[in-house]
Amino acid sequence: MKSKLIILGCGSSVGVPRADGFWGKCDKNNKKNFRTRCSAIIIKGSNSILIDTSPDIRKQLLTHKIKKISSVIFTHEHADQTNGLFELRPFYWKYKKRINIYGNLKTINYLKKSQDYLFKRIDNYPPIVKANVINSKFSLGKLNEKIYFKTIKTKHGKTSSMIYIFENTAYISDCNDLSIIKVKELKNLKYLIIDCLKLKKHPTHFNLKEALFVHQCLNPKKTILTNLHSDLDYNNLLKKLPPNVVPAHDGLSLNL
Image 1: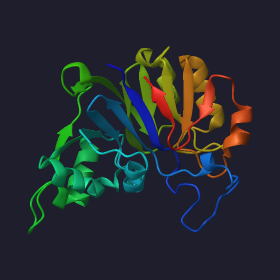
Image 2 (image 1 turned 120 degrees about the vertical axis):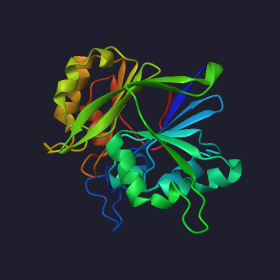
Image 3 (image 1 turned 60 degrees about the horizontal axis):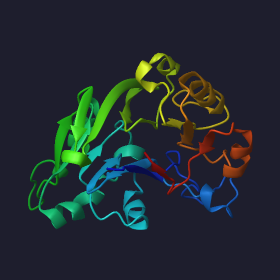
Image 4 (image 1 turned 135 degrees about the vertical axis):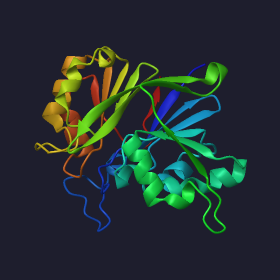
């Protein structure tokens, strides 16, 4: 069965434009410069696996008419990846079933503390999610809709982030760890979706030069740059890139 991935959001932690209307160097007349916070979804039949729950997840799900969430995998605990978790309550109400969420131990513990009412009954609020700490290899879904995952822990500043490898694709939304070029499982994939925050060097994210270096070393068929800040205009960035590298945009769909 065929699978696809939709980039629901490809913006940095403040999105483009920012909440105060600031577009930076991005042309506001280009729809591909309107960027919500990073999130994506893998769809294989009725199996719909959400990657991160950004603060914009409600709008993202409505825009793309996503009517079912089978499970959620988290890259890390930061607010721009997790603050939209409570928006999944309608999916619990609809199916009367807790949604399985997966992440490393730090992320799961953070969510249980910061959004405890989603995990255990408090007053009249029923728990809507069930926490699972991920292993290095796991699968989600049933029969021919099953997706197999490999995970790799990587550096994201002073914290860590999870790389997910699935369907000949790697998703690396938040990372500044150049040692990933040595990871055998990341080489020669069909798609590499990778953090590219800015032109200038950054302490917790890849910049353009570093992202292109990783692309060159890992040699995927195609690389998609995500987590894009407001100093990276879509068309200007596209002109700087080799033919098999493109900027992400909200709504970009990939056949895996």
